[in-house]
Image 1 (tube, rainbow, N blue to C red):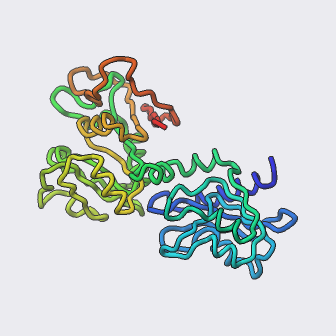
Image 2: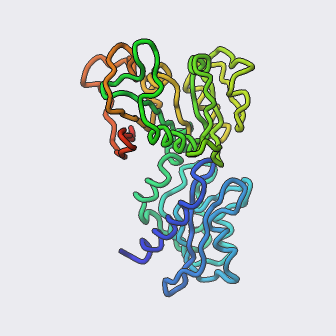
Image 3: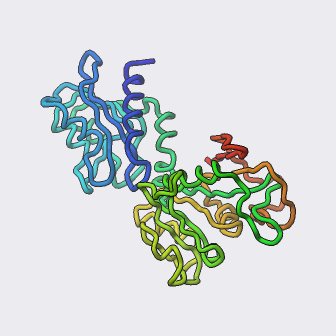
Length: 333
């Protein structure tokens, strides 16, 4: 392992301390001297706070001649904070090593600006590791829509409910708590109006004792019918977005423009199947319970696939046991 790789691993560790939700990516930065010793560290703590590079620079009195190791190409635009490329140039660093280029057309171009200022720049160090950490954010920015996770729970034979519609509970407590933890990793939680009218869900993210978690995804209701005035969602701590639309592409575009980068789809089989059929699911999260139900209530309905050659192949990225249940995570990219 090279020094840059070792230092980048430290920067990635720092990046993971930042919030996974929100419009900004998780970014870490270390400053090293000519001997390779780390002299300062920084990471991004959320929208409106100092970016990782600026955070690290604030911890040294003189950065001239130092090398900045940063997980994402330094930004090149002014938003709530100034461009990190300019901050690094003005600080007098001699070299910048980054992992992944910034795909945001508004923020990208930092590497070119640094080179134009006479700073040595190297990219691509531990790019696979950074791609993994930032996969949802990078996917969202590259597609111009939120990263979409579609979740469902089912029996081993693929049923989401019994013939009479009852479904509470197919999975056990550990799996249901895991759902709350996944909710807390999303910017928005999406359901259809049918789920709202039938179940009156609260759609909050709660801890083991039923307490509200620090981060709450904003509930988004897809469909043309209004949420009833007395519905639980009307008092959700994060507010409520009613789309008055069934156009999934348009809804996702609107959510992206609202700075929402991660969406957790937790509606019933109709909504889940709609996202899958439209090829708008980047990830599926499937909770399998060791039970058999049978009957017509499938977890996923028609996807428009008529021949086996058109089946949707996914890549399994996670397989874990939760009590008696299993959770499978699979991605389309």
